[in-house]
Length: 364
Image 1 (cartoon, rainbow, N blue to C red):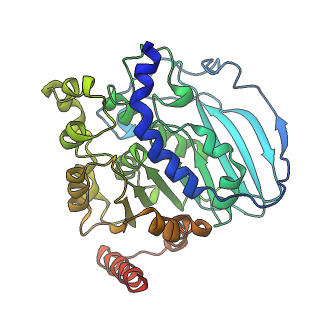
Image 2: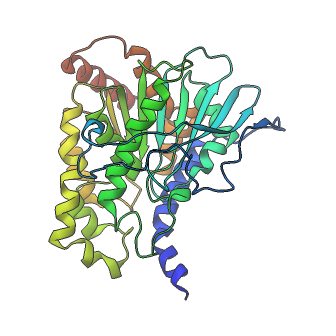
């Protein structure tokens, strides 16, 4: 077995859970699909590690300090890579950068008939790449709910994983992976605010797996995020590291050492979830997803109790009926962004969430 094969084995379980979500979220296209009209503006894929010449390289970044104001990141000019125009939506690929040797492929997907639509930022879990945002069926599904979809991959993932020894990966560098990605969310929102075709007063975020963790952390430090929807987030780091099947046994002991835990425990979403009480927050849990250890699930549920609307899917059939069928999962975010301009108290929000949950139970 080669060194690459040994490293790849750690990805198997993560890829299974990511593939499940991908299959459920992406509707099957019926009939012959219309070919997109691609307008290449600049080739940013040929040299993925090339920074725009004017990108400042004197950045100062603290992975354990999440608010952007307490770091020193400066963006270079965005580089438009490609623009695809289809009958129902337009997809832009834009390269943004605020660190040396870390350009980010950012996808902005808008309905052709929308005028300044609300924005939903999508963050999928490691090691999911950006292929989803290039999937026409996925793009058509998200924009039909009336908002623009914005997506990118987290740190040390996909095209952002390069120039590293293979022993360094998302989990071995967990503090960096989380802190960097939370900063990225804020910088992406800063860029989107410079555009005149998006409603930045109504911004939501959806995250799955490690992306759910990043979504929670980001929302606590950026009030521009008005609604938070997460599915199977990672967290409760001591238990997750001790029991998660996503960590190779040969590496687990290293991550349970006090010096490693001391860096990641302050970034535990369990500590941050209570700060989301004033905003719509939904926690979706796939109880059939064995990649999330039961003690971790319970700790996150406890932290979210009284703060989030907690929705559980007991099997793939229930998931398919309540989530993937006709893009039902996106209906919650759609309703929250429509209501985002209305000021409600935490009590009113919880009453609304409980009523919705009771309605779902009555249908079962």
